[in-house]
Amino acid sequence: MTTLRIFVSSVQKEFAEERAALRDYLRGDALMRRFFEPVLFEDVPAADRRADAVYLDEVERCDIYLGLLGNEYGYEDAEGVSPTQREFELATRRNKLRLIFVKGGDDRAKHSKMQALVRRAGSDLIRRRFASAAELLAAVYAALVQVLVDRELIRSGPFDATACPKATIAELDTERMAWFIRNARQMRGFPLSEAATPEELLTHLNLLDEGRPTHAAVLLFARQPQRFLIASELKCAHFHGTQVAKPIPSYQVYKGTVFELVDQAVDFVLSKIALSVGTRAAGPQVPVRYEIPREVIAEMIVNAVAHRDYTSDGSVQVMLFSDRIEVWNPGGLPPSLTLEKLRQPHGSVPGNPLLAEPMYLAGYIERMGTGTRDMIQRCREAGLPEPEFSIGDGFVTTVRRVGSGIHSAPEVTPEVTPEVARLLRVLTGEMARAEIMAALGLKDEKHFREQYQQAAIIAGMVEMTVADKPKSRLQKYRLTAKGSTMRKLLDKENGA
Image (cartoon, rainbow, N blue to C red; front, side, top):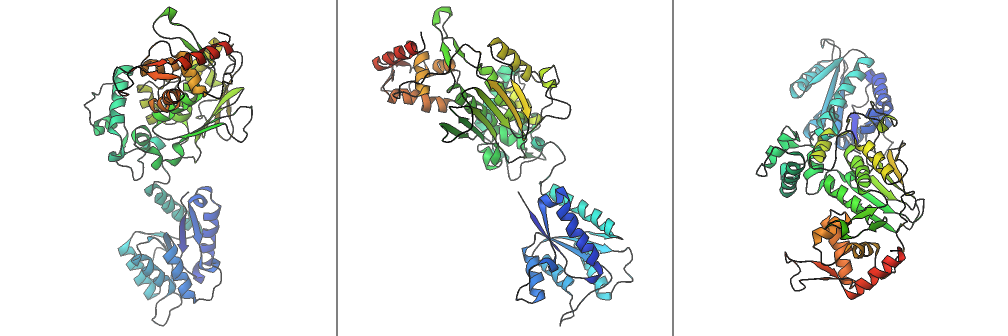
C-alpha cells in the first residue's frame, strides 16, 4: 500500500494548536491514515544535529510539504531567513508537492517578510485560506483527497472503469482481442468484425478512460495482467482430506487474462474429480459425466473472477477437498442483494460491469443474473445438495461432493497420474486432440498438452498416428498395448 509522508511546516508558536490537531486528525481518520503519515518537527527523535539540519532533512524525505503561513515570520537565522521560508524554498527546489494554507483573509497584519512569502507562494501555486482550526482541517482533507484522486489511489467510479496506471494499449494482446471478437460474434452476434482495430474494440466495450486502457481492459486483454494487478492471479489447491493441511498434494498459481484464469482453474478441478465415461453407441462423441457438473464448476469460478473486489490484495482461491469444493473471492454482495435473494430470480448487479459484459459476450457467463439459479438447478439434476453461499472475510461458494452416485476417483497405480488415467478412459480408437479435449471437457491447450498428452506419451500409454510429424494437421492419438492394458485395469477398478 502506498503511504505518503507529509511534513507539516516546522515549529511556529502561532500554529501549535493547529499543527497538533492536524497530526491527530490525519492519524485518526480511516481514509487519511491509510495513505498519509504526518511528520512534525517536534515529533522527530532527538539527534546530535542542528535543528535547521533536522527539519530540512525531513523536507528532503517527505512526499508532500504542508506549509502554514500566519502573521508571524518566526525566528530568523544569521541571514535573516525563517525556518518556514527555508523549508518552502527547499520543497520548491526538490519539486515536492506543496500545499500552502494561509491564515486570515487580510495580509496587512502580517510581518513584511511573511507578506512577501505569501505573495511568492501565491505566484508559484494555489494557496488556500482558513480562519480557524476546523476550517484548516476541512481544507487539508479536501486537498489530500484530491491528491489521492490525482494519483489514482482512490476513485469515484467503478474500479474496472478507471484507467490502469502505467498501462498503454501497446500492453494489450491483439491476438487475444481477435480471439474475443471471433467468440463474441459466434456466441452473441457481436457487431464488430475481426478486422476491427484494438482502439475500435476498446471504444465499443467502453474500456478506454481518456484514451488509456481501463483496469477491465488489462484484465481482459493484457499480455501480463498481473504486472499491473498482482492480486488478480488465481490459486488452486487440492487436499485429500476435509481440512486445509500441509503438505498440499496439488497446488497451482495461475496467471493470465480472466479468460485464461477461468479455463485453467476449471481444468484443474476437472482433472481431480471423478468422471464416468460412456460409449459411442448414441453418437460420435464419447459421453462423459463428472461428479460435479462442469457448468457448476465453471459458474463458481467465473462468478469469483468477474465479481471479486480487485482493490483487495487477496486472490481468488479454488480449494478442492474430499467432501466439497470451495471457491473464495475477496468481495461481497451489492447492497441490493442478500444471500436469500441469490436463490430467487434477481437482476444482474455485477461488481465489475465492464469486466462482466465481455465475459458474457465471449460465452463465459451464460445469462446475466441467472448464474446462481442455474447452479442450483444443475446440482439438483446431478443429485447433489444445493450450493451454499456465505460471507465472512470474503464471498464463498461451496458445493458438496456427495449424493452424485459417482465415487471419488480411484487411487490408480503410481505408473500413471490421475490426468493420464482420465485420458486413457476417454481415448477410443484414433482421436484428434480437439476430440480428446472435448471429451475431457478441457479448454486450456497448454494444460492438456503438458499434463495429459505428453505425460501419457512419456508413460508409453499413448502414441501418435503420425509419429514422424508431431505437428501434422492429420495428427491423431491412440492407445498403445500398454495403454490398453492399463485401460482395462482402470475399468475393472471402476466396476465397468
